[in-house]
Image (tube, rainbow, N blue to C red; front, side):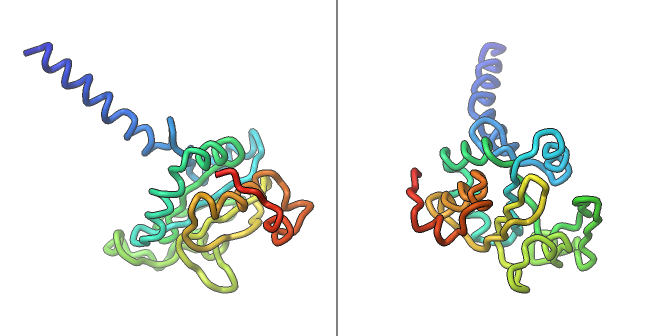
Length: 187
């Protein structure tokens, strides 16, 4: 009986281990950081940031997490070239970013799994022409300046040129339309 119990425990560890590791961003997944962790990491070893601004109720956000952010080539590229952050755009948690505090005064804890108030931080970094949409992927430089918020769901192949444009610092010398016309995807 004892041997059977050890066998079952070992089997559960083999099955659950990789799943739990992926949920926490290690072994095969994107190394997601909190905003505070990312800011500390940028101070120690500067590199650009990719921030997934999502909501709990957003279907395209869930597709992005399940289909795009799990692509092995995308995962490898993001982990090598960026710090990655997931930010719930309707969170009730205060955020400190570059010495400024952001809150969500319209947050309603009773609506935690549905639509809620938009966080001030979302307004500050994910606004495109006065409009907020989900998902929005925000690209920041190594000094945490917003380079571009890009709204909408994208496949790995659609996001590849954008990641490489910002991850390779090409944005410093080439306009995106010119870059895009000569880009050759590898994914």
